[in-house]
Length: 282
Image (cartoon, rainbow, N blue to C red; front, top):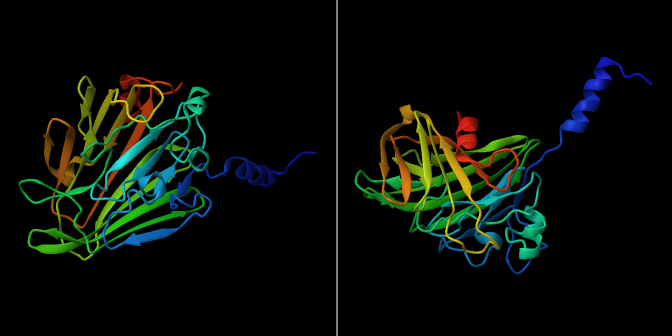
């Protein structure tokens, strides 16, 4: 049976329109019950929420925002394309990792991680903490998944500001979009960037920073080289700095900022070196 042109297009849309993204937010004690939002006046549910905060994934990586004073973005790298978050809960067993599952090779420490957001008061970094309330939310559209962290009542330059950080992953696209909003209309200077460790290689261009190396072993079954990159509009920034643990980008005073982030690891078939990651980002 031959398909008409329109029917063929519809058939292709069904075949290729699958949303290869997902999100995850749940209480650690109740893995079965997934949530769409959760809040805390203390601003710290790090030990209470599964994978320490909301998480999203595309085919190549998962990302989470720490529900704590860090509000940093952490990465779960994959050896092969696919969705693993709901099955692995961020921490697959050593046996699963050896069978080809991904793992948490990335270590944030006290940095922004990959594309995480802090504030800049003109002289130093300001964490999104303390807060009067912190809220995490997750959602899904036809071809994306997203997570948000809203930090309310953050002290900044003698005032209190409400900051929203949103991370969106797209079906069929490696990069994720990170957006930061000043919700109460106050212009702020955002700080973002990418962290690194001793022995890392770095590539920089006019609108990107890419790094590659091994993070200190923490919870993964093996040490694997991973790459991380952030892509940005240089017109939005007034300062680039390096504090010895992270490359930081300091924005102009603004109510909104957006960047793109991507990650890869040496166990992948497509992008498994810094040169390949840089070529992709460029």
